[in-house]
Each structure stands twice: as structure tokens, then as C-alpha cells.
Image (cartoon, rainbow over the protein chains, first blue to last red):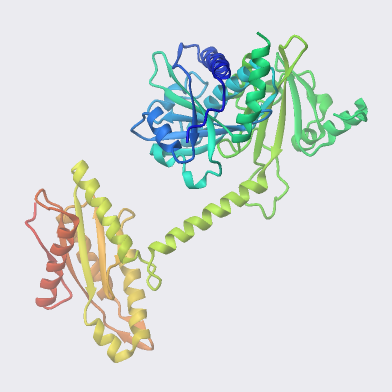
Length: 204
Length: 317
């Protein structure tokens, strides 16, 4: 069963909001790192709990081990962002972020949490400002460390049937670093967002 | 917020709440230092307000923390630290000095941007949470999990690795030795006339013999070696980074250690000895099962040739 939650106008508006917000996240990272950050075109999909693994695997084409950080957002829109890091190159940002380049495992974890927080925070702020709606977020936490991609999300542990997924990936100029950011919004939020998008469209 | 929120009520709450709250301006000067911070740092507010945070507290990790503060000013976003990656920001005493088992308070910290009317960040507000209890529970849980995992790998009577785990270890070491082209040896050993000990003196005596022999074997090993109970009275040793010559020397030393002293069991002084078979990984070794089979044939030869001896299989280097 295909679900079309939004009209074409609403979809266009959503894409534009997400583009702005994701671009802001890339800018933020670049300001802190001092390096050029390249962003892919953000993708938006409606996923069911059954096809989420396939969708994620198709979008995040990392064959080797990954680490993943999750961070929840709430208030008008609720959901979780998951940042997936290719393990190789994760420590390539260490010096840019103010760490010694010789990282012990705690420092490496902290680095991943910090980068995830920068990205997710910037996106949440971007969406929040563009849609003129209040959003807040909580502390990030580690979901997976040096694990195969298909162990990061376990369908049996997911309590929803549909979610709105937004995805973008980041790479950093002259560095080995790359990561994917996946934002999942809950079913109730899909409804709430419809109203917010209409308000946004009305302003034009 | 409520209509009742007079400044004095809010001040009281910020000052007295059971979390650390302190605020710095763009120059990193302290502009607020609540009672929690006063008590735990043993520094009154009037001795630190107006001073640079890092100058007042030189033990803080300056480079990392200053960069983190700067990112809050630039990005206008929350930042966080967690005890799991960084046990504490400030080295404070915690409230479980007797029962806790940790040296100082574990802390989670939130950095909040405080914006003015034009949207610029004027201050960073820190909230510092005492999460020592959580960290203690987490450590206990991890210890317990580790104990459970250990127990599932150990033989109850002898406390050596059980058969499943010693074989798994051999499999892992075989692959590693193969991949990096390092030496590896295996010893199979069993207790001579063990059935007779059981039949003559009873199973309790047999159990004690097993325990004592296990201990003597374990005491003769290096940290890198693995020892498991492979069968009823049979033992397997996996010796990484060891070639046949070294393995033979070790095997002989273990044989002597078992023979040297009688074993006291159920009121008897029993003379116990072991037979051993030794083999090493060679280029033509197909799999780890072959190592076991070769060591076993060495063990068999030791038995045939009179027991209480070491037989090595394969050409010496």
C-alpha cells in the first residue's frame, strides 16, 4: 500500500525546508572545521518498519564497519536522528575538533558524539527557524560501534509501522571523513508536519 | 513559566537546585556560580565571579573545553558531555565515599546558549549533573555480564576453559597464526591410570586429582597460553608464538611439575603422572583439527611407550 501523506505542494515545501536545514548543518560543520564540507542532495522517503533496513542499506552504501550515534528531538515535531559514520576516517577529524590525533576509545566516542551533535543541532535549528516552530533536542548517545551496517537498526525493536525518513551525506574536503545523517519522524509527527507545512506555504 | 515566578523565587531555585549551574560570558568569565558548585568545589561565589574560568580552575581540560564553548557561541546550539566518555569535568567528591567504589563524582554536563534579543549568544550556561549512582550501576552490570560470560567458558570443577571454549580459542589462534605467519603449537595431555584412581579410591579422590593437576598445569604456563579441560581427564594447551622446540620444553616442564609431588586426595598420597603429545603448525597443516589429531597421536605414542613422557610429532626445525 503506497501512502501519499502530502500534496505535491507540501512535498515541495518539505524538500525546500530540508534542503535549507541540511545546508545549514553543512555550513556549521565547515565553520567549526575550517574545511569545505560537501553535502549530497537530501532525500525524503516514507518508510515502513519492514523496508527500513533495505532503504537504509541502499542509501548508506558503507560495506565496512560503521559507528552510529542517535539523538532525539521533540516539541512540535518528534523523532530521532541517526548519524552513521564510516569507521575509517572517523578519527580524521580529531585535530580539527581540538583532540590529540592519538585517540583512545573514549576520546574517539566523544568525537563522534560531538560531530553528531553539531550536525543534528544545526539541522534541528534550521528546520525550527524555517518553519517557525519550536524544537528541542536531547543529548546524543552511541548506538553502535564498529559494527556491520545491518546491525544498527533492528526491526524487531522498532515500535512503529511508518516513519518519514530524511537522509543526507557529508564529506569533508582533504579528509577521509564521511557520514550519513538519517532523520526519522514518527507517525504522529507526519500529521503535525502537514499542518506546519500548510502554514509555511500560506506565508508565500 | 508561572505568574508566581518572581525574581526572588527563580533566584532561589537556580541557586539551590541539586544540580551544578554556572554561567560564563564571551570572555569565559564566571557570572553565576550556584550553591551546588560552591559546596562541591569548596569555592564561594564571590571568590570566583568575574574571574576567567580556566584561570580559576587550571585543572580543567582547557583546549577541548574552550573549543566546545566556542562552538556554542558560533553555532548557537546546545552541547553535551557524558560521563561514559569523560568521567568528569570537575574533580568533585561524591556522596558515596564509603560504598561507592569510584574515586570522584561522575558528571553529565549540558552547555546551553543564552541569547540576547538580537539572537546573538551572550552567555553559555552549564548544567552539571551528578550521575555517580548511574555510573556505579553501569559498572556493576558490566562486571556481572563479564562474570556470566566467563562462567559460560569455564569448566566448573577445574576452573579451566571448557572444551567448547578451548577449541574456539584454538580456531582463533590457528587463523591468526596462519594469517600473520606466526608459530603455534598444541599439546594434548591426559592423566595416567586415571580410571584406576577413580575405581580404587573413589570419584571424590579423582576430582581432587583433577583439581590439583589442573592447578599445576596452570601454574606452569605463560600469560599468553591457553589451557582447557578437553575431556574427562584430558587437557589441551594452545601455545601461540611457540614452535615445536619451545613447546617440547614447556611440555617436559609440565610433566615434571605434575610428577614431582604426590597428590593428597581423600587421605591418600597418590603418585600421579601425565602423558603428553606435542605438535606445531606447519605450512602443510590443513586446519586446526589436524593439529588436534597430530597431538593426539603423539599422546597415544607416549602411552604406548610407557606413559609419563612427552612425544613430539613432526620434524624439528
